[in-house]
Image (tube, rainbow, N blue to C red):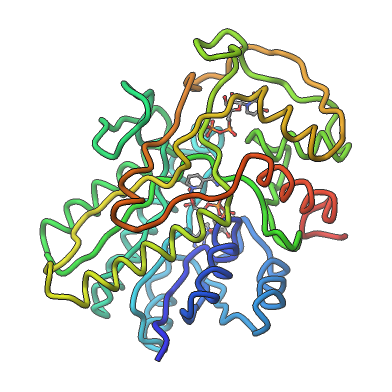
Length: 348
Ligand code: NAD
Ligand code: UDP
């Protein structure tokens, strides 16, 4: 029988791509999402892509009763926990909302998992937990610190997971620390669909390319990098999705054999290990889309760091996973999604 996975936040950007990868890998999935930052249309499109209707429940991770109903109705092998809020600026303005969703919501989820003796969790963490890194590439033992409530909420959840693993050795908890997810499904049917003006670089570039936004502002050209602009480790969302399948496979293999009692708390970076500057990404996007991307240099954005890229060795060693797709493919797939869906999931 296929193993069944609860995917919280499975209607979102990374969640939808991961649902497709999980289905292809033979997992059964149940998606639980309150649609606060996603739409039913995303779920419909995933259903079309996988050729079967997704088992979808509209619900909030802070609602223990609703979660209990889901856990009563299904026997889960584990949970992939994407549900959460992710806008750094909004988290500064509304910290309570972020701690409530991301921290309280996760505690409620963990409590219900515990009640139903489901102890396998893959959690969406972020490279933001490393703050301004002391050394590059960033490995999993690097010191952690955060400067905004969003980052703090991720770091707090990591601390909670660590404490949980110490308290009870039957938990298997894998926080995956994502670097910069970009790109879209190669079909052009699903992708990132920001509500307002995008905060992140790739969706901003693609909206300039498609003519929705006039000009990109590049935040800082005086960083100590090759061309003065910020350097990030961009990773294709379908590679990232595959990383979740690899984490689950690892979890399954470890818990099946008597080699270890449990995994405990096992943080793993998901990145490519390569840094790309803002200007390099703009040039790559312009090339594949054959569009001009007008830009201007602007002041540095508060809280930004110069360079951030992963050591991807642990994922390779333990999960036997590594990112495959190039910057050109990330741009190509983003462009396909953006040009096929200029208004995202709403009104095509
Ligand atoms: P997203 O907003 O597209 O997806 C998150 C999903 O969670 C949405 O569908 C939203 O409706 C749902 N959700 C939010 N609060 C919920 C709640 N209380 N109950 C139920 N559902 C809820 O974001 P994404 O880019 O797919 O990110 C997924 C996860 O990965 C998030 O936890 C995010 O913080 C983390 N992450 C994202 C990035 C990134 O750059 N996209 C980087 C690092 C980490
Ligand atoms: N960036 C930019 N203009 C934008 C958005 C982002 O110059 O409109 C830069 C930002 O300063 C950083 C890089 O692009 O150097 C990646 O930013 P993003 O918000 O996508 O991800 P972050 O790494 O900050 O989470």
